[in-house]
Image 1 (cartoon, rainbow, N blue to C red):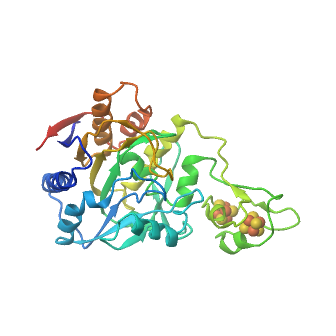
Image 2: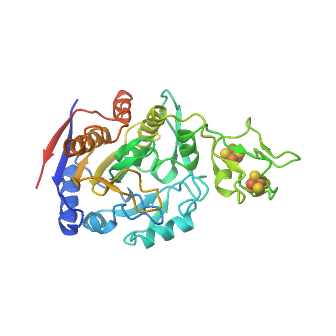
Length: 348
Ligand code: SF4
Ligand code: SF4
């Protein structure tokens, strides 16, 4: 099996008009190749960039896509809240950052709710996960546009379409399951017995007694308590994560995000912006160093082929060893997420 990856080369991120024109050309190419008829509502999965980050892809680069989709459907920006404590932990501050970063063209929906409570369990039956906790709005949509910034990532090696799907579409509990042991740790010495976790825990697993603890026989690993505890007494258990297993889990969650509840696959247009190629991801709340030359925009209906084409182009220009993490591609291929065999089709 071979997948088509469309590519328009642009070697300068400041060429906003060229980038807009190219984005739209690529979107239309995939739309027509796959004979996509847009449904009434269409989530556009983006990343708003953490507060202080300056290298995320700004929406002014794909306003052309937004305006085009507005003539065909009702598009909206879609994101999930993050696991760590920051501006994007809760919907209110997350949406505030989004607007400050220029995402004002469309309504914004946080797909998994304020505490990660809105998710669907999507069955995949793979090595790490039998089910994936996917943000409800995304899980219930049969179509998606996934816009990703292709760059490095501390744990995954690189982050593109697979990362945007796997981590970006997972609910808070899904993110916890990929990053760590799926159940958090409550430190009784830091606990102030305020009962906030008790009020939010969906399974009554937070036990605030003489020695506060989590009842693991009830805990479903939703990660709500980590977010809501005002005293940081509940932490992620990072013990079990290695880059290899993290990438396998990421690919499995990406498969979950592309799968409908009835087991069929969603119609998805993936667009990777390969500019501002930093060592770390856009969740870092500070300006990051650019480590590779701008490449342009690539699009496909196959996230594995797309990310493979992006990393190959970067490695052609730079050190061949730049960014590890290729097992998200090979494992993604093994579980049926896509193929690493691609045909690069250059457009102008
Ligand atoms: S929210 Fe935190 S501080 Fe409050 S009772 Fe729960 S663990 Fe303790
Ligand atoms: S104790 Fe478990 S089920 Fe309860 S909020 Fe925390 S992670 Fe969710």
